[in-house]
Length: 167
Image (tube, rainbow, N blue to C red; front, side, top):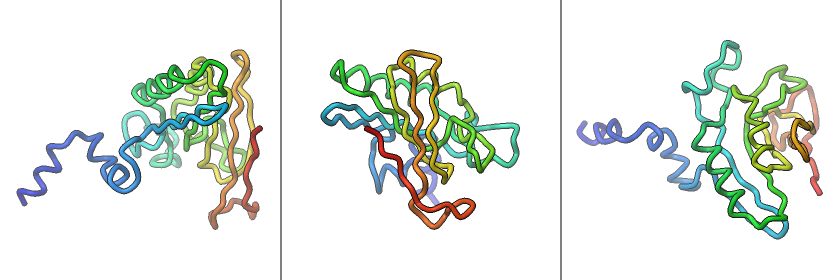
């Protein structure tokens, strides 16, 4: 019993991601700099929490959001990058309403404008199990949102596995 009390004393953030941190990576928002590009990961999977709450009951538990801490980490990664590299943000949940699902995957879809204002040119994302490419052009040069199709057995409407190639 005393061993369980130690878990209750941990900060919620540390407890929520403990298995991910233990088995995958201690970094929830990793960044990778390669020749010509900086790719900044941004955690959108926070489970059912204050930021992910929505009035759409069918989305409860599947909707994600970007919190300030995660957005700041993307900004920090972009600020460390060489001036002329492509800035790419990688997220899980979709900020654009999916054609087949008919729903957004992010509670705060306006964050796509924040990514663009940080200099992101491309957002790579998953979640909707459907291939798609969208643009958000409310800033220069604009933001391309690329959704890879699934490479799994969880296909929608009989769609084949797919991927997008970005050059």
